[in-house]
Length: 240
Ligand SMILES: NC(=O)c1ccc[n+]([C@@H]2O[C@H](COP(=O)([O-])OP(=O)(O)OC[C@H]3O[C@@H](n4cnc5c(N)ncnc54)[C@H](OP(=O)(O)O)[C@@H]3O)[C@@H](O)[C@H]2O)c1
Image (tube, rainbow, N blue to C red):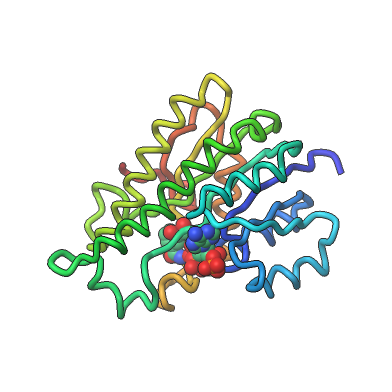
């Protein structure tokens, strides 16, 4: 198929990552679907039955930099058009029972450090490690799934670990956009909306289908001029 692209999606076994994988496959592209637990991929297995030649499931724990390097070794001859850094954590689950660990007065600093490892160091290490694959792709795009709660202007979420991890991710996206412009690599920080996934325990208002359809449209539109911006799934720009 002409125009067929290679996508690398992290956290592809559930939630938004799974829906990204599904919609990208439906559009006729190839997906390297990265999951940290290869024994917990039932939904991907169902997709595999339909898209055997386009879905490649790969193992990746973004907290473990050796795991990132070993995936990069496996994919060393593969060009990547779009890398979607989607894997992330809101902190220990169930969220509402553990949220005090992120609240002022009862902060658990080990939790804060773990959340930074996953939401900040992991995606930035991915950006460093897969640079050459992306330079060899046609689209040259790195996407970072952030959240509006990382916006300095947002005051809804009082969870120190999660909110600040996304703020720091946003700053990293701004730095990457500047550094990678000369290589014509475009980067984007996105908020998916408040989506019904395991992460938020059912209080959300948006279906994954709608969020991902919107985000894929924004990713398609991304160019050098809009590189380094922070947008909602529906294209609205978000205050840093
Ligand atoms: N849902 C929302 O309303 C919302 C809003 C704003 C932003 N986000 C962001 O959207 C992204 C996806 O979240 P989601 O809602 O789809 O949540 P989810 O259903 O909890 O899925 C999170 C995914 O990340 C993976 N993951 C977590 N830690 C990982 C690690 N160390 N290495 C590799 N994979 C890891 C999980 O793997 P396992 O299955 O193995 O745990 C899972 O596949 C996150 O970055 C999140 O912060 C979500």
